[in-house]
Image (cartoon, rainbow over the protein chains, first blue to last red):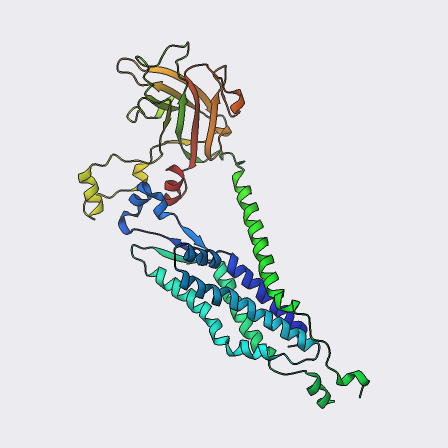
Length: 175
Length: 229
């Protein structure tokens, strides 16, 4: 994969990440078993479906006082993926100029396993909410698919961005 | 192989590249936010009319009387406010009324499209999975109409009194003029309904305004509940 193709893939991954963070990720449909119609009549707000994006979910964690969990999810679902793509963008630019991709790529690849944490957090959230009693259910929205696609695309990019290739030194040696 | 400069490293790319993904993410977020905002604004504009040949539920969700009857007489004895109820007629027949759901001593009355007169014993049966079931369809408190090109719905408002109910006002609404959702009508100086609030009669007496809710009856029960409540 040449640097130009890498940059296109990185731009796509960043776009998908943006969609994944801002678009609806999941919708919670509360239910109360057999008395759902009655609850709907008496307390309609309790049965109203609620849609969350990842960022709205993080904000509600902060609002409800779950600061630690909120910070962890913010770091590994927002900050780390954006930083990782930034490092890859820089690496692709360096490769385009015939330079080594730089130590930061090695750092990102070392920390790469942490990037799966965002998928893990999402999965845990879904499983946790799906386990609610009374027939409540969670519908996964397209934002979650965009987020997962961004993670998968960034993994694919990490496989192709490689280490110290196309450097001036190696290029000179080849010549 | 090349010139003198070939042994020197080319300049490193600008640190700006680190920020490119963040800019893209923020740009997508901005587009998404703006698109959502525009979508919400579009939703506010109600332009659809009811469809001829379809069935709808209709009910009055709000009704307001002037402080006095037509002619200036007071509603009930002393300073009491009237006891409101209404009646819907279609094809010359009364198809719905709230005579058994009078809102007492008010100038503004509200009704809901769902409700049930359930006793505590009945409620226990419903909650305990034995005996009768509570179906949302049985709880609908609205008239059912079929929209025809020249059809009309007649609304009559009354003050409920022990001896003889006072007629507060009424009007006929062409069905084709209705929109799904809430239709606000104001009674003008000639006693005719208008959607223009500025034409509402200031001190005519009797019926002042009302809101007619129209709900597509072919919707799933869950949406009906949402629309009628």
